Image 1 (spheres, rainbow, N blue to C red):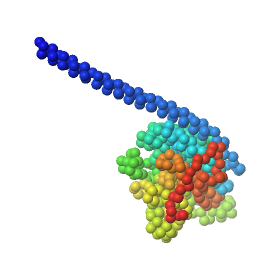
Image 2 (cartoon, rainbow, N blue to C red; image 1 turned 180 degrees about the vertical axis):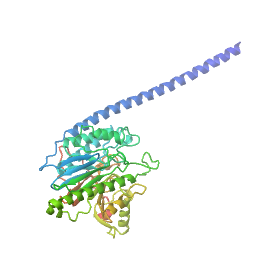
Image 3 (spheres, rainbow, N blue to C red; image 1 turned 135 degrees about the vertical axis):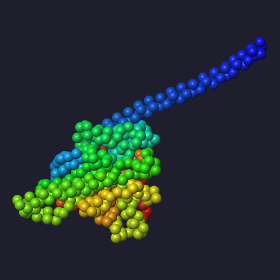
Image 4 (cartoon, rainbow, N blue to C red; image 1 turned 90 degrees about the vertical axis):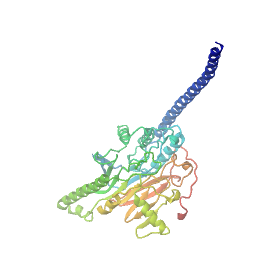
Length: 444
């Protein structure tokens, strides 16, 4: 009897020891859960307050004041536009704006808003093309997965400025883990809330979202140059999160679409010229040498030809070669690297084949602002806006600015870069202080 009691007592003693352990574990996990919930609630609140503050700031900028009549934009098909003008057209290239839209990026998003507004207000462009990465929903830097937040800030800013614009998507605009797809963001941009956004989804039977063409049309209805935007997609070969830098290329049916677009424009020009020959011979004579329309292409991820051209130029002691002619800018990425798509595509070859494409404008590599002519085609990086994605880049200024494209009435193109930290780029908000770093000592 006493032995059973001892067992019972021992059992009771054991139970009494175990019970507090379970209780403490429960308390720990409940406490941890409370901390997590509190953290989520607090950061969500900060995100909402910060996002609304930046949207309010975006809306606070005055509309750009133009000194002359603006071109007329005519939409004639899904993703196809005519820009009617009788004067020189000014196009601004922005790239890699990288608005996070989360609680961790509020201050840096505000800086990006300020930079974009200052550049556009001073330059007074007729049209703005963003070559990707408006948004940057990377949670450990932005503090959110919501990629529509960055899009909201930017769209409201552009609407306040009153400038026509469009975008070709970059790899960060719609990450695999972000809330919204390219189609979703396109629906948002084209909802009617932002009439100055001219983005359209483009043809459904062509890969990507936002394959577009903007034809510059003179008073004779002749297209003098076409601006072609392509979706360069995102990551490939299982690199879903982009940590291995395996980037996609322009797809074959996009290249075919581009080739067909060039053919359509050439046929339209030729038909009009034939009509002029019968009715207005003098007008027809002005276009006697117009064999094919010149095209400028815009997308986010650079072609492999950027890498080929740079490697050849560098191997020749940073001097021109038979194939490469230096225009301006440099390569500033670590190791002097370019990050193109990892596979091959036929876009560059098709540009040569059609004798149409004479220039390409991309983004993606934020410290690269090189422009070279390679085998007769200008390959140009835009200047980035980014304050967020690259560690410490908000403290640096040499790479930050915009690309300016001046297109004459006859379609001739003159492109150049402008750095943001010039006195002419004024704003109602103060600029941050930065170091104007050396991007590449070989060009100093």
